[in-house]
Length: 73
Image 1 (cartoon, rainbow, N blue to C red):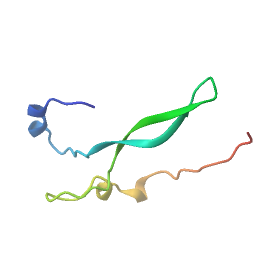
Image 2: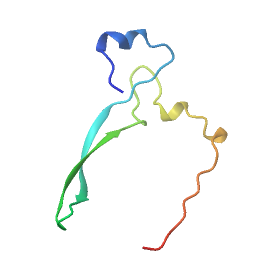
Image 3: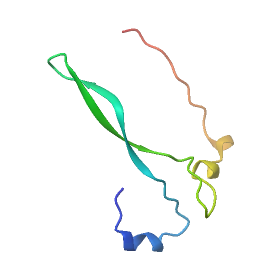
Image 4: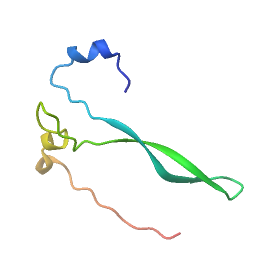
């Protein structure tokens, strides 16, 4: 979520994570060709000089399990 820079110092108990763009993904076009898809990414494991990463603050034992399944094409 974009925030004005002068608003950031007013955040209390918040964490910020760096944002980047991944250009290694592809999208299929209707004509059968592919083109590079720019995907917004963020690194929640990024440690700062002022404390822990966002991931380090997650209480994983309190999260519900996440199950992945399969499907047929």
